[in-house]
Structure formats: C-alpha cells, structure tokens
Image 1 (cartoon, rainbow, N blue to C red):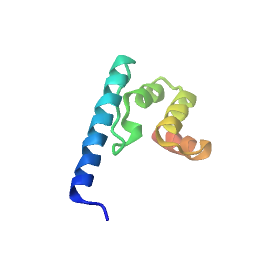
Image 2: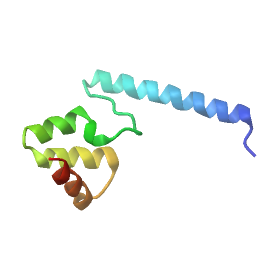
Image 3: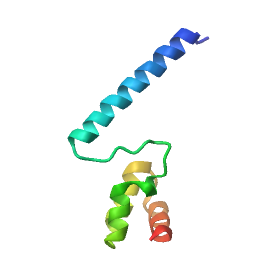
Image 4: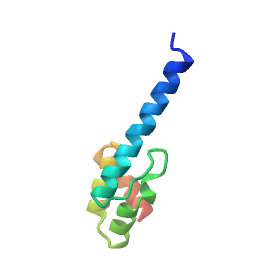
Length: 80
C-alpha cells in the first residue's frame, strides 16, 4: 500500500519534472502546453492553421497527442 508520504514525494517529483520541462521549452523558444489543455489551442497549431499549413498543424497535433494520422487530420480539418 502506498503511503501518504510516498504520494507527496511523487507529487513533488512530478512538479520538479514539469518545471524542468518548462525550462527546456523556454530555452528552445517553444510554448509549453499543459497536458490537460486542448492541443488545438496551442500557439503553434493555431499559427499553422491560420497560415493554411494543415500538414504542419496535423504533424504538431500528432506530436502533442500521440494520435494517428487519420484522427489528427479529422480534428485539424474540423478546426480549420
């Protein structure tokens, strides 16, 4: 059985890893998108959709979500 102390240690470690990931994103000049937010709202995908570059938007959506090509294409087509 997992103790409350172990749960707290895991939460602390997750927060630390998220902070490090945000630092890496900032260093690479990328926008960090919280995994619980909608990937369609990410600045990269929105910019690709606005510029008419659906292939780039689909690629980015797949990278962010891990979905297949057909599903990503359907989502981007619906959004743009």
